[in-house]
Length: 271
Image 1 (cartoon, rainbow, N blue to C red):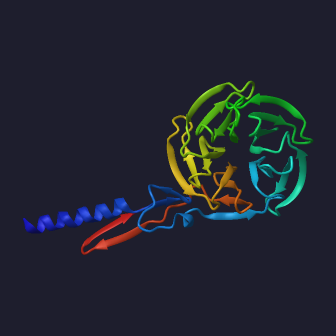
Image 2 (cartoon, rainbow, N blue to C red):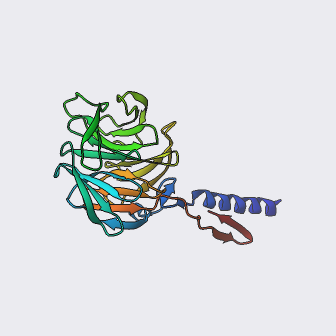
Image 3 (spheres, one colour):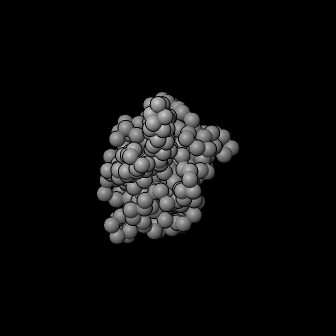
């Protein structure tokens, strides 16, 4: 009987150790950081680009090029070759508080934070084609931020109210709303049915279910003030305001390493 108790105790220790193991998938941490792990080391940076100006804000991609606008900088939006980090084109922005950018397949959408307006722009010359109000339009300090396109609708981060909105691009009607995963939502991206949300208060990047607002995974940003994000192929571009750098961060799902641990005759294999 004593041998059985010892064996069961060993098995429970094994399972407890496996359950407490941190699981890292594509740079995202499923679970909480503990055990002295440095969270800044858990978000792999695949590439970087210096922006044309400091304080990069709005960021998106058209599938080939990056588009970046500067937060309280020059009122221009730059088209950048990510391979060489060179500017290949630029257009005038509607203002100089460019807090979010999105690409709908043909046109750019730009958030002017201080105005609380969202502009649809011709990427050839910056012509304003359409304007809709952000949910915070009309407030003394709108705090309108990141923007993403899901193929039909806009997703928008409002750090003043700590909310994420789904908007009708025709008139700005709010179609869905949920509480942001952190207190300072600054950027929104979209890929394969999942929202990517950056937060300048927690310095984190989150994967979020757009239907429920539930956090699916999270990853520490390489910059301590991450702003807009865009996920062209599962991995994510993020504009870093403190370091004045555009980061390409691994947020996809490569194979997960399997580790093996043994306690006497009891062996466990876990991810």
